[in-house]
Image (cartoon, rainbow, N blue to C red; front, side, top):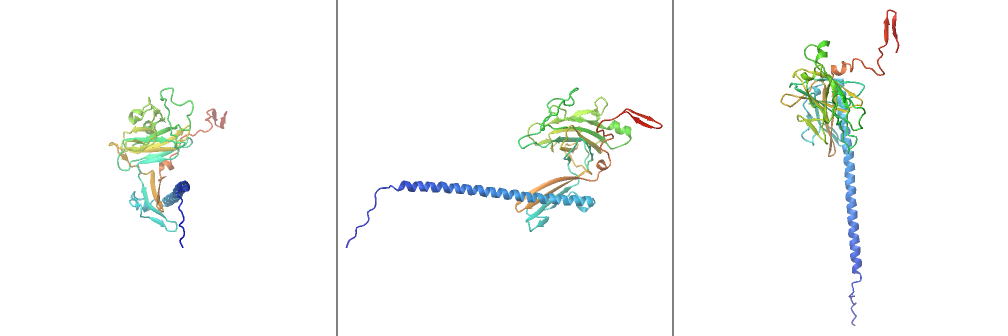
Length: 354
């Protein structure tokens, strides 16, 4: 018995549906893959941020440990030289390890004579006093630079555009929050006689005014005269930076002081005017325009930590014991609410009309 074979339909009415479904599936697949990629990227960024925070906290903890050790024993052998220890050239090594948290300290660098002195806040109330003493190479120039932190990622600090000629020394109004503030400075050589007259005659004093049209370089011997006191100086870089002077990183506002006695240490007193200056840097330069290491004042500590495969480096400064910081007062007379001069002194006492 013969059976009829089923007939194949010759029309293609379902082909369009197959194509549409295929396209739909492909689109959904691409969306899912794209979303998965975004999720993985976000997960990795979140993990990297977490690991970076862990590494930074570990580095800061090590710096605090070293600071406590130095305060307890400044003569500790660890602070005797400026030689780094740890695997500073190999990120896979470790000085200290915490296997439970997969955190390692990979490198610690201690420098007793850094190339610059850095101060995080110079206020309007108290003076910042420091020594400027070369470690081995004489100083021919002292570079003072200062700035404020950028108010936001899209903003830069600014400076005055007006000159500080006679009659236009101080601004009638303060600039906006992005304007760099002014500094008062006193620079005193400590070589030779230290009596009152010699200190008064050799002291270089003035106001550092950040201006795009100001004076960048002053010479100690010619500026330190009765006719030129107080000294007015200061010039600003424009643009986004970074900024350099004699190959050294500096802040936006700067002044270069040519000093006469290359082997003489100096004492520097800084005080901001009208508003605090958050970042100040002092560099020494020799006759070849190379940087000079500065001794006795600050210790630079740089610690690198690793959490998993993420590294974080933290640099900090803490002061060594210094007579400039510990023994020298910030001012001879500090007036807060005014100075009364209407006083009468008699044998039986003092009367004041203030």
